[in-house]
Image 1 (cartoon, chains in turn red, cyan):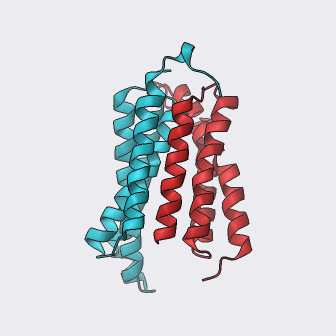
Image 2 (cartoon, rainbow over the protein chains, first blue to last red):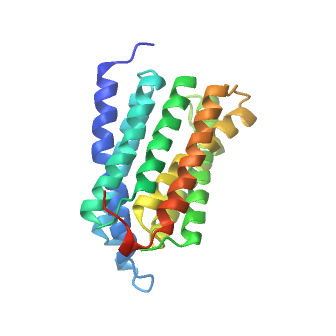
Length: 117
Length: 127
């Protein structure tokens, strides 16, 4: 199957946007107070996180059916880089050598899985 | 923020749940026929959706115990679970290139959770 160009674009864009999902989930997680139920159902970061993650998963899934996994999986892997970058700027987390190394190894692994599919 | 081991454990559990959900949805979709009775009795799909929801809830709680940059990459273990599950339940053949990739994913997760977590925050270098 030849990879449709729209599938590549969708994977890249949903990676860039979907990367904010975990960031919002972290903000939500830290602001939840189990004694106050409204801190759960009125939690704006939580709602945003659900919407962003939900939409990006649906887009990813659709795009993966329209292209070769050997081409698309590496792009899916790169999405994890955006999550890390967003976390550094929005959550003040720190990226270290080992974290980058681990991400790089994982992306290589995901790419090989795509090649082997 | 140092990542607590229980948070890592919950992330692994979440990933196992969502991977199982994927496999259930896949097997449910294979059995699906377009009539009401088939849809309503397709417990694979309902169970799959339920597990996805449960996994999503657990992720939130896991994130209370650590940072995104260490915990989030753990979801890549889904490639491991899905490969094992596909091979066992669907009889799919997983070739050696895929196994090497899976091995690298394992190594990458270990590097992040051990190496990425071991460094105390004040001495962590921002790269």
